[in-house]
Each structure stands twice: as structure tokens, then as C-alpha cells.
View 1 (tube, one colour):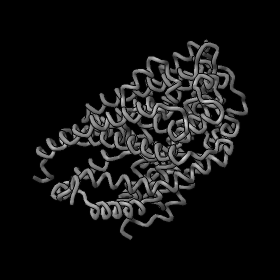
View 2: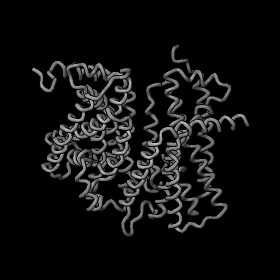
View 3: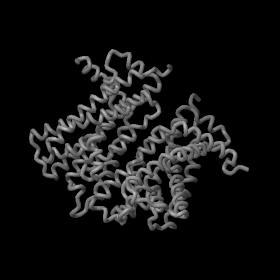
View 4: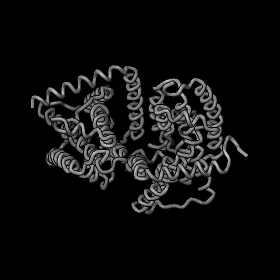
Length: 262
Length: 265
């Protein structure tokens, strides 16, 4: 276990050192995040007028959902995209061989090898928006609700990672479908709005099949003190289930891996 | 006889080879088509929202608008900056520049080939949409369809020229594709892909009319959906943007090629 921690620290130190070489990128990223967030807020404001709500959520509450979405989007930029996006390249160029030969778990290596600090400002802004929205919505933070929200955020992160990894792992068979993650990203955009803003059939889809609800709506409900216990348990159950599925699928997929030249 | 370096044989060969090339990647293109579902997600949010009444799109008009926005987007997606960046980086650009044909034509043909490959997938998604929402089904009149087709192609031309401009900046800077990312954000919010322009506050709406973005999605989508729309103003604005961008692209491209030194030179 200690070996994995040490390796992880090395991985991330080198990743940050590499990224610091490209300082202009940080500026561009900041600008893109600021533009994107103001665009999202503008779009959200279109749904609100005097006396108007979105699926029963008022403006401040919807801001919390938007903030949580921004946090997860930043997490994807920082962690998921640079790591899981590289799996396809490893398969295509045959460099997955080198990963498999290393005396360390291949899923660990592929999932945590690098880190892109470019997404950190987005996470910061998202947390800020969440805090502001919570304040406006009159959220009273207690220790139990804070713990619950942290657990639910972890569960949400695990669900997102597992989904992304499942799709990335299919590249062992279909090398060319690297843009399948783009489809996932497009669908994840539904997490920008509270679950109740969608028609019932989609609500079911976003809860059970593609559990976007557990990323943004459920943590916001926890903060607002509206979350139902069965929903929390379902979120935790799904997180464990998805992670187990991702792990099992990776081990299964590796049995079909034939190196690039064979 | 060759016009702009093209004659009928060159056009046939370019389109034929690029279409065959794109057919090889049909699985990838199907996934790209599927990744354009955003208008449908926005449709489901809009149709249940209180703000819907302010859109001026009653009943099935909203469904038709967003389906049209999806279709217009499918046939005006442009990726020339990425293709160009890769070609320049790998040194493939040098042989292209030696040919007696403007390299941009090759990219135009690649885009048209891709659109043709995309057609069945886009039609399938549209059919699926009608299966779920049968009451929204409509067939545009032949004249309306032709006008919408023209508007979509003009939108494609504007997007293509705009991105070629950014691509030509690759001759000077490696950060050019970051510029593409930055311009994509206002496109996303101002084009009408996520919300019809009638939803905007009047000031924002008036401002957005001075950008090319509404003419990329909102205008062609309204024509396709059979909405009452000022055709003269719309096509006029599209033509004006093309007239502005085309000489600019050619000029910057020429200046860029002059300072281009191939890899290893």
C-alpha cells in the first residue's frame, strides 16, 4: 500500500512539473473557464423570471447544482481526461505492453498516472458557486450534513470515473472509437440542471442507467436537507456497483488484448 | 477549364476519394453524430420549464426547432483546424502545397465526404426522435427544404472560413487551436443550439445579431422548422459574413505559406 502512495506522489509531482512548462496554457484555460461559466449562468438565467422555477428549484438552489456540475467538470479536466483519454493511444501504439509489464496494477497506473492542473481553477470556481448558492438558499451547514455531502461527492466521483473507464476500456476491442467518451460528455451535460427539470422517463434514465443525478442533484439535496435516505443508499450502492463493474470489465478486457503488432 | 483550380474531374476524384476515406471511419462518425444530442437534452428542459411561454414557439414548434438545430449542427460541424494542425505537424502539408490545387479544397472535400457519411446516422436519430414524439412529425415543403439546405451550407461555409482563419494562424503560433476552443464557447451559447434566440433578453439578442453565431444554427434551423423568418435579412447576413471572411482567409493563408518552413528545414 505504501508503495502505491509513494508512486502516486512521484506521478503527480512529475505531471505538475511538466505542466508548469506551459504557462500560457494556464491563462487560456482560465479565460475559457470564465467564459464558459458566465455562458452557463446566462443560459440558466433564461429559465428564470419573476415567479419562475425550474422543476421546483429556485434560482439559488439551481446555482448549487450548476456549481456541483462545474466541480465535476473540473475534475474531469484535471484527472479523467488526461489519464483515461490516453488509454486509446496506448492500445493503438502498443505502449500498453509497457504498462502491463510494470510491477504495479495496470488500472492504477492508467487511472492515476498524470494530473492536469488546468482544471483546478474550474473546481475552485465551482466550489465558490456552490458556496454562494448555498448561502443564498439559506443552507445551514451541520457536521452530519457536511459528512454526508462529502461521502456523496466521493460516490459521484467514483460513478463518473467508472463510467468513463468502462468506455475507455472498450478501446481494447474497438481502437477507433476513441470519441465514445465525447458521447458520454454530451450526456453528462444533463447534470447542469436539477433532475426534476426533466420529464419522468429521462429522470429514470439519469438515475439508474446513467446516474448523473447522483453527481449534482443528490448532493445539492443533501445540503438543502431534502435528501431521502433510500436515494443516498442507492447512490452509494451504484457507486460500488459501477466501480466493481469497471474493475471486472478491465480484467476481462485484458484477456483479449493482443499487442499492436500481433 | 479550371475555376479556382478546380474542374469537374478534380472535383469528382477529390469527393470520391474523401467519401471512401470517411466511410472507413463510419463507426467513429456515428459516435460523433450521437455526441450532438445536446439540443435534445435542452429540449427536454425547455419543454417542461415555466419560461417556455416566452419563447414564441408553441406546441410542437419547440420540438421542431430543436430537431432542426440538431440537424443543422450535424451538417455544419467543422474540424479543419484540427486536421490542418496535424498535417502541418507531421509534415504532410508540404506535398499538399506543391500540388497545383489550394490545400483548403482538400479539406472542403473531406468535410463534404464526412457529411455524406453522417447523413444516414443523422436520419436515424431524427427517425428515432419522431418515434418518441410522433406528433412533432412534419415534412417541409420542397421550396422550404431547398432554402434550409442552402442556409445550412452557407452556415457551413461561414464556420469553415472562420476556422480556416484560425487554422492559418497556425503558421505563426502553435496556440492557434486554443483560439478555436475560445471561440467555441460564445458559439455554443449564442448560436441557438441551447436556447432559441427568442429566449434572450432584447439587449443580448441585438448584440448577438452582430456576431456570425446566430446565422450558424438559429437562422437555418428556423428555416428548416418552417418558422416565420426574415429570409432576406438572414441570407444577406450570411452572405456578408462570407464576403468578409473569404478574402481575409485567402490573404492570411498566402502570407502564412510565405513564412512556412517545412519540418526539418
